[in-house]
Image 1 (tube, rainbow, N blue to C red):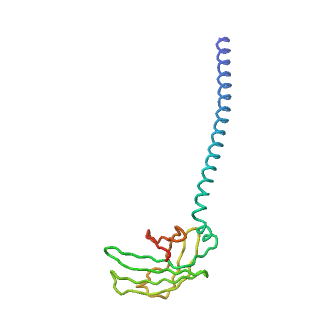
Image 2: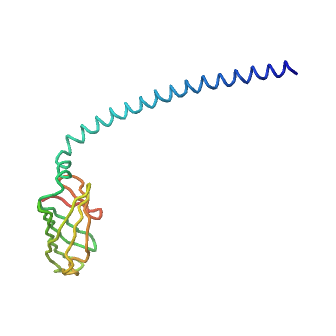
Image 3: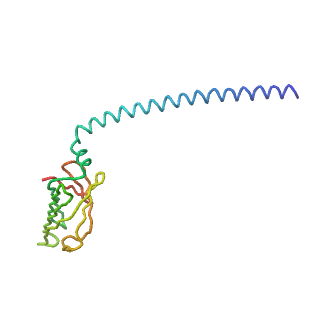
Length: 161
């Protein structure tokens, strides 16, 4: 019985020692693999950032300044609707929206001024409470800054004019 217990103890000790040895090796391999992945991602991000920086410097400056300036035009021409909207943004955080509808409400037009704020790549428009709600039914609207020359409103592109 003592021989069996001794053999079992030696085998158990060998198994535990082998497990500890391979766990340390696996940890080293895992750490080396993670470091290689981080280095690879850093190189990839560096390449992507240099490409993005060359193409979107204006966009980054736009975000940093927290204002936008210029006129952007949204033209809608579908089977059910046709309208043109001009968004004119000013550096002081105000905007003017001119809207002219051809279909479905022919002759519906108007102009309104309000304020805007920029957070990340979103422009939030705030309309005054007293307004022609038939021409401008919403209290707020959101446009996404896609590039320095293109905004997106409800999945529709709004281009700088």
